[in-house]
Length: 420
Ligand SMILES: *Cc1c(COP(=O)(O)O)cnc(C)c1O
Image 1 (tube, helix red, strand yellow):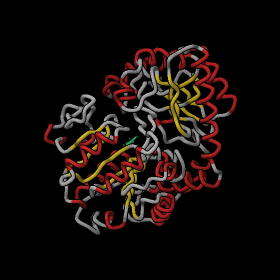
Image 2 (cartoon, rainbow, N blue to C red):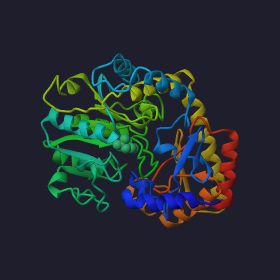
Image 3 (spheres, rainbow, N blue to C red):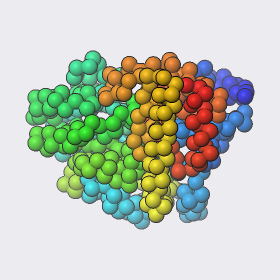
Image 4 (cartoon, protein in one colour):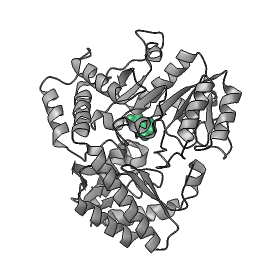
């Protein structure tokens, strides 16, 4: 296997694009493969190598790449033009569908990315409640805007320190953090800040360091706690939305937040974000209310058309049932391999999300950090050489798509056996 063309492209890319990539996690060391095309479960690089893809664009490609139904929807839209700057019937149709699946969503607005969705949702939560602070979960990722780029400090709940240069500490002083799966720590933080606290924002399943699952009862207790203290609960379902079920984690776990953010799958693989919630909250958004939010590409016709096709296909074909069965099979088989090899690793996951943690089962961010990162990276490279593309970090979820065949799965399990 050669990666010579990718290596050369990387040398050129580095001089034009910082790190040679358009988003940091793509910067595989020593250099990433540059993709030429992708179809179904497979992704191909410039040198003609083909990999079975479990990264799947970090979540959106739940049907696999280049799905004909989504492609047809985009093509049909292309013939009618792809940007108007005016409202369309398409966005009303998609809004109605999304609202019908998400019990927390009466009304919603479309934006272009998950980052914009959480940024706007937090502004709206602050505008609606008239309060300044919010709590996020340590290790929770909500995109790349200032207020949420706050890393875990110690294991204790701490005031947020910005995670990046260029973010004044003043900008994150209203960002509080609590460890995942620890309702006592959360209760202390919420109760002592309730008069200033607008919202708690949480990935119901920690996806960006995970998947790390909620302990039984955790989300229910969080719902009760936030309600009793007049604090809004925001589920960031950018990964879990249309992944765990049509109604996301809120359907899967039966816990209804006040607001929800969506992205990734809901655009059928084209750029999109959604934030939504109860009517009286959403009506605070401009032009119906005083909380400002806007975007040139918001509700972009191709993204919305692809999203409608995606949702209809997922529903009509009952895709989640098949996918979740594949996920169960994969997790069980991986657990067997891990135990046969006598490794103290842990297979985690839910629905069509999975991952081997190189360490003990994690319940929060601090646990995840104890896993063997370097060991995982060595393993990642062996898998790549075996034609399997996993996310290039111990801290990213692996996904399986509806396009993965039995043969793909068996080949993948063989590679795990060989490379672990
Ligand atoms: C990916 C992600 C985001 C950010 O979405 P972008 O479209 O990359 O801006 C926000 N929240 C969660 C949970 C995500 O996984």
